[in-house]
View 1: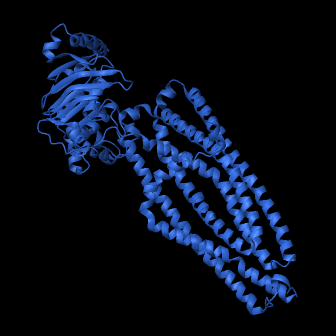
View 2 (view 1 turned 60 degrees about the horizontal axis):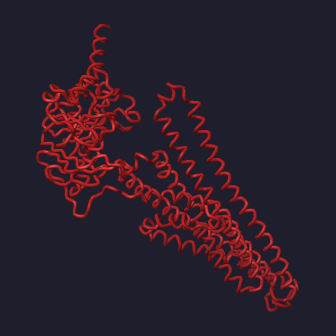
View 3 (view 1 turned 60 degrees about the vertical axis):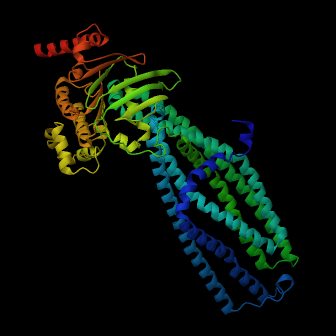
Length: 611
């Protein structure tokens, strides 16, 4: 951090926070206007509150013989006057309580609604970011920004932002009234405000910096916790609890240190403000008492001025208290703004139309792709897949097979070249229509922590219950689903952890069947399954791929049996392309791979038979 930024406040974080919130505030202009009117009414009533007391003190002083100087001409106190002043004061206090309640409710509603819409906006933005972003970013930190940082913005807006606005308005109005009462004594209040501003100016940036570090540390903690819980089986199996716990404790200690630093700086500012307020009050009491003795002010004027001073100093104290909280909120807002600043690389281009498919033919034409670090992965790769054809992509790990799949679903776009389905460039089609035309099945099928029925229905949200159950039957999943405790209404654990690998795959296949897309992509769909589960999944896959264009990535030799073509990728090029009979019957890379891959499997099967 530069020297300048340490001694002067950097309004960038607060400005960026306001920038991301402003569009959502416009939607609630009327509610904000109502809250502002109630707030102004509260300030006016607060200014009027001391005046009944002034009238009583001056009239009682006149009754006791104090009729000289500024108090000359004041009528003596009467019972009716005292009762009237008491009633007026009670009415002012009651009305101020009502207006304060209304302004608080109005701004609290605005804060909650803005936070809700901002969180929805950020979540939609995160979902639209490319796989490249999600690959390199921390999921735990992203969740922390989405939930924790936006929640902090909302909390501070209601508990600090609203009082801050009210205090500023109160301070301005009271300064005007005090200037009217006694300009000389008002200079004391103005001087106190100036000293406070100088003091807070030197502290605000340091508090923001420490708060920013705290929020980053909390984001790292969330990521560590998420990774640990997501891999809890491995952690427990390898006895890594102490090691992982140590890493968590170190991150926790760092976040604690930064949090304590931010609070220490904020507390120091509050205590300095207490000293400023105390000094200003003492000066007003001495100077005001002398002004009364000189006959320039009445005793009631001094009481009113002292009460105004107390009211005016309260905003200074609150400003000191809120500076730390607002600085922490600004740090949170900056983290949310950073997330929204991430560019959406893949989106609908102007004039994009819904994709219309006929046979599901897929075409890669002279594709150029980098690996994310500027190194070419594909350079001029071309591939034609006929409608209804089944193609297997083979090759060593890192050859680019999964990259081709991500290009097909437009998780990212190629640097050069063209990809088309049935002759339509994917960039000319809307993302929603493109992705609804492709069923994607991964090795680690993603299931959600909801019912089996809803997990299948994600394939097509308007599907009926009967269609969901028919998809489960076709995927050979109906038998085990109905055997679950609540059948289709059984709520699955996170990522489907309560099911076996084969069961999860068949639920995912049922979802793909319900989608009824013309193009199917299988990415290691049978890898990691035991022979029995693999056989069951293979039957389900045969039902899914029948009559559909299928692109399969696999290291499973049994998975290539039903393919029309086998492709071998190497060094960013397709070096072998032919039918299984052609390539397996020749001295090809595919044949060599098949012999290596099939030998261990055959040995394992033989061992099982002998056992």
